[in-house]
Image (cartoon, rainbow, N blue to C red; front, side):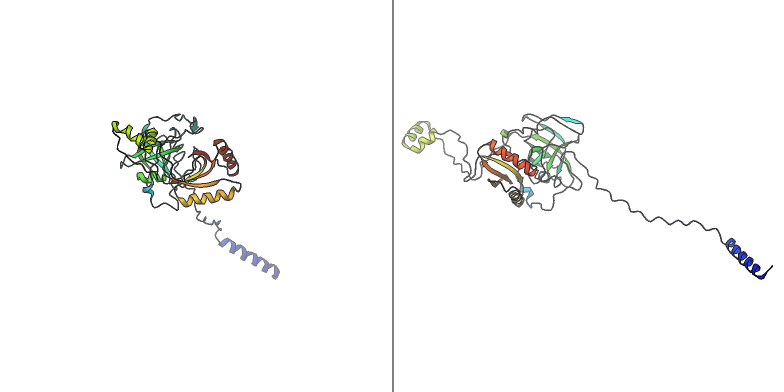
Length: 328
């Protein structure tokens, strides 16, 4: 065999020996990188229809004097035209009361805050978490109730202007301010008693700025003579026994559109500026009407409710919310 052939055979033998001496190569598998769990959306605990979420809260600007916010003052109001009709939520039917009447119940009360602040309530009003208001599934809108925290005995009077809650063990959802005054904003809920307050049940207070003078009753035998001698006494004798209180000085009266109600004056002024910027065609003035610790934005006055209603419809078409007519 030629030397060249021996050389080729020797090279092949060396290669075969080298390959045979190596262990079979295992298939390498890379260790999977640590997979980070996908971020989960926060789990909310919804008290259906206006309720407390775990990430709900007071917001960035909370008034320093929440305890000083006065309770709602019960007064006679017309019931809402649409908000008291029967309705269904989560497969359950609700039939709201069609008139004011006594009501009393116990259960869990919750609260709702910044997640719903500024949104429409069932009555069409803007929800203000710093107002003394509440949501109830069947009480007439609007109406008034006294809510008592059974754990500490604290009570507040609130105006019911929204629907909810819709969990069976919940009886009422309070505004943030009302729940604060009852002492359960931290826990989110509490055992409460809810009792209706009819307008005639609440003590009436004289409007601010009015001065009531108490006079001793005249003796029957001298009353006639005094009236004849004093012209002012004659006018007083002809007046009704209990004349209605005079309106506050310089307070406008008439028909207005309410654009919103706020627990903070800065918020009210900010919303008014935004409305004026968006509705350049408005010819009436937007007044800030302070009452009962609230700042209400009233547009007007108008000649009658029909004229106010036409403007309200234009606002609804422009801003997708419809103010409601109020009388002052």
